[in-house]
Length: 489
Image (cartoon, rainbow, N blue to C red; front, side, top):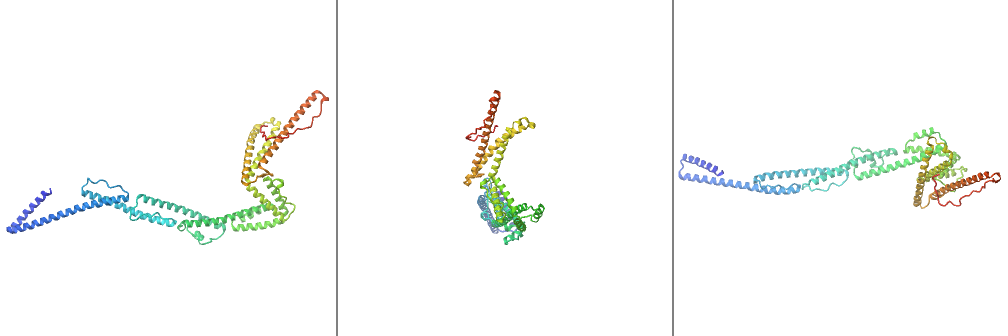
């Protein structure tokens, strides 16, 4: 033990001092003085040792208290687990353990602050390029939580993705601008347009803000509108040229030769089209009579395709071969072409219904031919039966669609759509009425013919004196009542 080892060491020291004093032949008084000096030094030494050990104890306890307090604060700040129980440890062990824990937390805090600084610099750089707001400020003197850092990283990732998308959008818009400028055959107009054209597509950081991209979109739209306008003009001029070529009987090789010189919709090609139009119009004036004749034929075809009533067809006097008459014909043709285009959907319904109805009439007429029953080569009668079933479905289907289209038109325009001067319903009803009258008339004729045949046979059996010519009277129905659709013939 400490006491025993100290006592032994003290006894050895005292014996050694006694030998020294004996050799020095010290008197009792001198010995007493040296013993007093020895005792005072021992007391001071012990007091110093006690003082040092008590100071050590205080430092250990203070360290434990301070580190515990700091660990609790940092654990809360860093959102870490609370310190585990250390009651079973000795104070020095507690001090060493707490110091290690505190060092770990301080290192983690420093790492997070360093990571926060790097992320904030990255966020600031990319947001400045995109012209977007930085991520909400995080206090630099407080360690951020993992969730705060993850949210900041996610924000940076979103901004990086946005940057990639804007780069691609810029490249796409820039390529369009360059193409449109080429098609318009014009140089960049304005400083912004020039900057876009001369920019390096690999370094587009100056064009990635929303303001710049909106400005680029506006430039793109403006140039695109000019290109589309030129395209529409070019197409219209080409169509007019093609009509004039046809009417003037221009050789196809001449037409192809000219088109090869103006293959695009660029301003230079449009200029060539204008020159050709001017030349053809001059030739047209020299051949007014031929033009009017062909336009008159074209106009009649349009009236037929648009189901225009005879009374509604304009009388433009084709024999009057003047420039004014030519202009009237051109205006009329253009007007009816526009009408045909605007009403193409309902006109298609009329056409489909008429085709199906005409097919029905054809099948009905064919069914009346009894001789067809004698010729069934190649399953002809089976094919006719299939066609009959198909026409039974097609006629009511297209009739329904046409009537629905007519109702929709009348509701939208406030006036009925006219087919040969009749509303859609009246037109369909009149077709069926004529169909039913014809069928009823044919039926009466068959009955009358059969009656006359029976009368003739009866008279022949009675002898020549009883034979009289049959009455020519034919009974027609006064009224057919409601429409009866007779599909089974």
